Length: 97
Image (tube, rainbow, N blue to C red):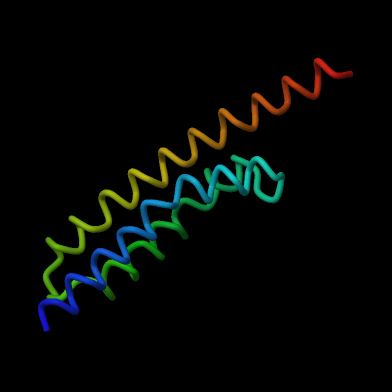
C-alpha cells in the first residue's frame, strides 16, 4: 500500500517537474505565446489543485497546498523562461530582416 503511494507520488512529481520544459518547447515552436500562459494561470491553478487532490492520500488541505506550491512555482518559472525565449526569438527575426 505505501509502496504504491510512494511510486505514484514520485511519478507524478517527475511529470510535474517537466512543466517548464513543456511550456518552453511549446513557446519555442510557436504553438503557445507567453501571453497565453499569463492569461490562463487561473485555469492552470485549478488543474493543479485537482491534480493535488488526486495524488494526495488524505483530505486535509495542508498536503494539497504542499503539492500545489511547487507546481505553481514551476508554472511561474516556465512562464518567465518562455517569455525570455520568445523575446530572444523575436530579436533573431529582427536581425535577419
